[in-house]
Length: 173
Picture 1: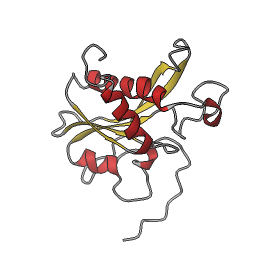
Picture 2 (picture 1 turned 45 degrees about the horizontal axis):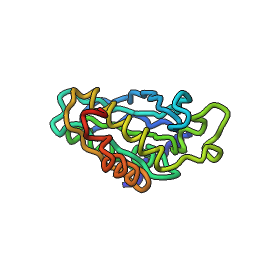
Picture 3 (picture 1 turned 180 degrees about the vertical axis):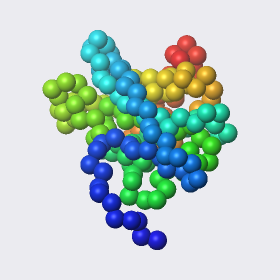
């Protein structure tokens, strides 16, 4: 079936999930400040977590992490009937999306400097962004195990953070 004609979403923000036989679930947007770098820990970069909260999720919580030159809209597109967050929500997950510092949805993470001017490294994204996002979701969900689906550079940065011990060692969380 073709999609009904609709106005394109020009926002950089994920919209509601629309599960079958349930009302639409509006997202909650959370600003997550993290240090820009080890050299300058006082300068903060604002990441964004988006949550589609499910009370008592049967499947637990899942964090979706986009790739380079993408945003969380790669998962939450409104161009298909059932996008990934909707599918996961319908199937019992508490769904979280991360827009880390290289997200195209967050062009001005350090005031006055756009994404192309920031020159982020994977080390910075692994050391701060992945660790802080996993830590935040873990703490907000009652210290329950979380699942992660990561793509491209997001997956590489997550693997770096895991191998460094920053996503599972209680000393860091």
